[in-house]
Length: 169
Image (cartoon, rainbow, N blue to C red; front, side, top):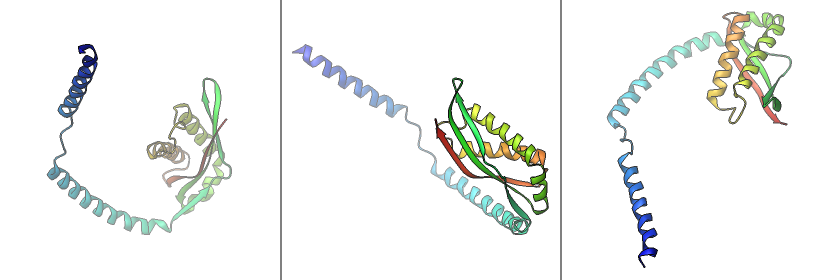
C-alpha cells in the first residue's frame, strides 16, 4: 500500500513546494501613491506639450505636402540562402510644400537609399514574425526618415508606409 501512496505523496509535496516558491518569489505590488503622482506629472507634461504642438501643427499643416513615390518597393526575405517571402510596400514622404519637386528630382537616389534600408531591415529579421509590430515599424520609419533627410534635407517631416504586404513563397 505504501508503494501506491508514495507517488501521490511526492506529487502533493512537489505541488506544495511549487506554490510556496511562486508565492515567495512573487513581485511586490506597485506603490499606488508613487504611480498616481507619476501619472499626474506625466499628464501635465503631455498637456503642455500637446498645446505647444497644436499651435505648431496649425502653422505647419498648410505648408506640408505628401509626395507618393511612383513605384512600390519589393524586398526579398532570405533565409538559408533561399528567398522565403517577398515584402511589397508603398511609401510617401511628408515634406515642406516647396520641396515636392526636389523629391521627384532625387527619386532615384531616394529609392536606392530606401532599398538599402529595407534590405538591411529584412536581413536583420525585421520582416519575420510580427513584422507590423509598432516597435519594428517605428525603427523602419526612423531609418527611412534619416536617409530621406540626408538626401533631401531637413524639410522632411516623416515617412508614411501606405501599403505593406508580405507574400510567403
